Image 1 (cartoon, rainbow, N blue to C red):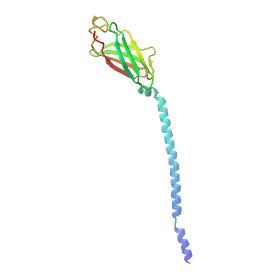
Image 2: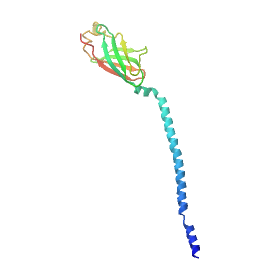
Image 3: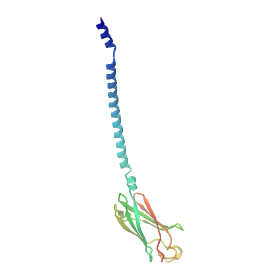
Image 4: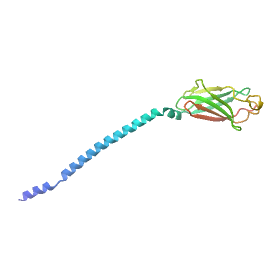
Length: 174
């Protein structure tokens, strides 16, 4: 009789089925969780890919960087020569150039550049701006005139991607 009660007590134990049940639930949660995780990562990658194509111009504009190497004012005329270097990581095209006399806020030059003035990466160009408006107060209309020399001018360039760069320069005293 002892034998029968031992058998009955072994049937009442359910530890093996609890472990197997826990493993089945763990496998189910892990498989569903990994599917959700990988689907979410794929959606994030697809969003980033679409975003890179959607705003490519803006991201390229952030990589533009132009350095004013030298500014030369023609003392006997109205020309300005800019020496520009591209120190960014994308090619840059100059669209407009503006020169403003700082003390009076007088617009001396605003020139839209229609020719191809693309500065390649790690390259430089010489940009000649003709005929700045130096006709104020009936002076001699040249950079060595006393009204225009020894004053600061803000020179700004705008690229075709909408980014702008500026510097302050001064014509030499005569």
